[in-house]
Length: 443
Image (tube, one colour):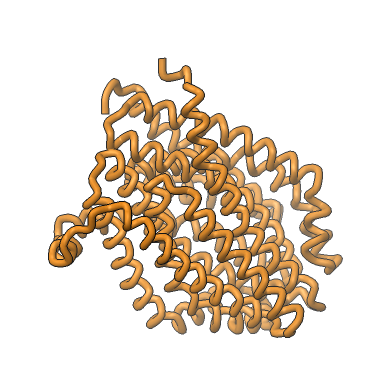
C-alpha cells in the first residue's frame, strides 16, 4: 500500500532537501545582514529605503522565477524518461528566455523604478534611499535570471550539492561585501546594492562552471541540431505557455508581498522598517521550506517521466511529513528566540517595539504556510502550471484582498492576518486540485 513509505523514500527526501534547506537559509540570512548593517544607521528611513528597493527587485526577480520552476519540472521529467537530448535542450531554452528577458528589463529599468516609486506612499527620505539602492541593484537582475535557469536545471537532475554550493558561495560573498562596503567603507544603501550585484555575477560564473562539469556526463548533439531544436516552434510554444502560467502565478504572489510593504509604508517609516524585519523572517521560512519543495519537484517529475505511480504518491506523502516536522522547528525557534532576533537586526527602539508586537504572526506562519510550499513542489514537478495559476488567482482575489479589506481597521495586524489566511488557502486549494490524481491507478 502506498501509505506505507519505504525508508529509502525518506532517505531520498532528506538527501535532496537538506542541502537545499541549508543553502536556501543563506538567502534570507543575506537579507538579515542587509537589514543589520543598514538597521544600525541612525535613521529608520535607511532601512525603509533598502526594504522598499529590495521589494521592487524581489518582485521583478520572483516574477521570473518561472525560469527555475519550469526548468526543474521539465528536466526532472526528461531524467525520468532518460532522454539526454531533452535534458540538454531544456537548459538551452531556459538560457535563451533568460537572455531575452534580461535585455528587456535592462531597457525598461528606469521606467520600472519610476513607476514603483510613484505607487508607494513612503516618505520622501525612504523614496530617496530606495531610488539610490535601485539605480545600482537593477544591474544584477540579468545574472539572477541566468542563475534561475542554471539552478532549475541542476535541481531537476537531482544534483542538490551543486546548487547548494552555488547559493552558499554567492551569499557568503554578498555578506562579506555588505560588511565591507557599508560598515567599513560607509557607502550606505549604495554599498548594500553594489554588494548584491557583484555577488549575483560571481554566482553566475560559478554556476556556468557547474553546468560545464555536468555537461561532461552527456553526449552533446551536433551544433546544427541544437540550433534547429532551440527555435522549433512546437517546443517553444509549449514552453512559453508553461512559463506564462507560472509567470501569472508568480506575479500574483509577489503582488501580495508588495502590497504588504506598500501598505506598511502608508502607516509610517517605523512600520515599513518593522515589517521589513519580520518579512526577513518570512523569507527565512519560505526559503527553508522550499528545500523540501525542491526535493519533491525533482522526485515527482522523475516519477511522472518514468510513469511510476507508486513513487509519485510516496514522494508526496513523505514530503508532507518532513515539511510538517520542519515547520514545528521553525515555529518553536521564533517563539523562543524571536524577540532577541528582532533586537539583533536593529537598535532603533521604535522599530523594535513595533516588530515585537507583530511577532506572534510569524510564530503562526510556519503552520499556515508549510502545505502550500510542498504542493507547489508537486505541481511544478508535474508541470501543472494552469492549476497553480488558477489556485493563486483564487487565493489572491477571493481570500487575501477580502480578508484585508474586512479587517483593515486593525491596521498592521490586518496585513499579517491576510498573509496567514492567504498562505493557508493556497495549501488547501492545491490539495483539493491534487486529490483526484492520487486516486488514479496509473499515470
